[in-house]
Image (cartoon, rainbow, N blue to C red):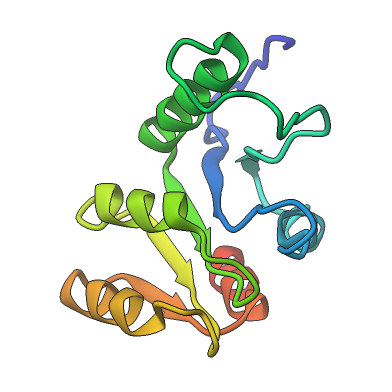
Amino acid sequence: MKAIEIQAPNKSPKKVFLAGSIEMGKAEKWQEKIVRECSEKAFIFLNPRRDDWDSSWTQSIDNHNFSEQVNWELDCLEESDYIVMYFDPNTMSPISLLELGLHATSGKLIVCCPEGFWRKGNVDIVCKRNNIYQTNNIEGVIEYLKTL
């Protein structure tokens, strides 16, 4: 990564973590759409989707590649100014549900949970209880991001 210099009076870009459904082959590549549609905004998008993901990696703390991925995600979630969380109705997304719980009170979440997601009721209640911005479509996320 190259150094970024920001001179006064410019503000530093906000970090936006793109959390949510990835399940290869099931989830749409919603991250690409958000990055493309918000390209005029001063955001640094942190995307956990990776081209070299290998589904044969053992999901264990002892597997270097897997552990590196999970720790990268956890670090980026904490460092981010905003967390976009998308629950694709074609997926179960248990890790995204875990992350929703971890960050529900952070004030950083922007949640998209369309009709048909198997735990939409749970997501709706968590969002309502914690005053989390929620929408039913990616376009709603994009419009919200453009206001930041």
